[in-house]
Image: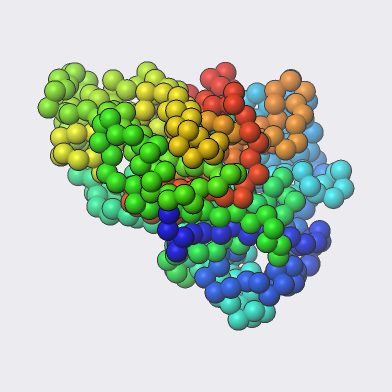
Length: 251
Length: 251
């Protein structure tokens, strides 16, 4: 068993509760205590980024639509929270049995448009996804470079459910500084489509790996993946991980 | 940054090409060279398990059905391989644009029913999923216990595509010795359904993490995840990771 290309997943403990306007990059660097190294990939739970960016909604200010009221009443939900989910959606994929699966304005297909009431201070507040998780990742990367002189790829993660499989897993919603896909075999099918089975969504696998040290998802909001030979890419984004609509068989 | 609960992902290099009837457990233990430790989780690509179990099909012996012939002709595929995919399926979910998404006899929903022509010796052969990946995981675990005195959870993995997201990721198709789901919050919605968002599919995240050292998926067929505080469970199986049909909104 060779140990030369082992990968380590390190929790970054001690990141404090984040409030709107906080300098998340600085708080991460402080918590990491100079232990970040060249080659590390930083995985940051979207919730700390969203909180820092003030992406919190107080439900007391939300007037639910008729649709939100009816759906909430049928399934015992808070109509104001349903309303926020509808507002964060650009397309409803499924709306049944108390569950809303929708496409967010970013293009993510997930439950409740990424709107989350857990681990948000104040019983009446919910947390949204960042407006532009790729831009957030890019900013974090630049700020961390400035603070530490280390140019580290940053992945912003959230936990999504999946079709057909039970349980949620961590995925990458924002990516800066690395190629999120790795195409091992290349090639095309006879119709010129990329051979999908040859493309590994490594940023999602890195986000999933990071979750293993985050525990309870929110307990440890930041992790480092060390030793993975990523491909640097300043053009790639988390959108590369979205199925193009014309190839999506489950819209 | 605490390092006490870091997790390591170690490749097990040197597992030879597997042939039907080979003792896969022994070959893994030999390749691992006594470096396995208590607490390790062993992740094994399904392909080495399938090969050891003789789950290879020579396409020369396959007589394609009319459906297989028509679909193959339309999309430039091998009709005999399509026929094998149909035989490995118990239900077709999508069959379009050259892609077959089906439910396998095990209950997995994936492309091509897990039938794979890559990295199989002989141009005319394809590899199937193990008949019962949980039983295969259980056998490997028992054999490794006998060979090493270490009682290690075993995950058998395959790379599946996902709805809505581009690229494949490694998931757990067989599990022995550990709880594949971790329910952090517990609780039920007003209708008595488990709160899905509280359940993390940790076995899938471990399989995804392992893929990061497997490279090209087949280059390194076995990996070890060390330092993850798994919950031992001798009753749990990979089937726990399947969405129950009555809750599946994307059948």
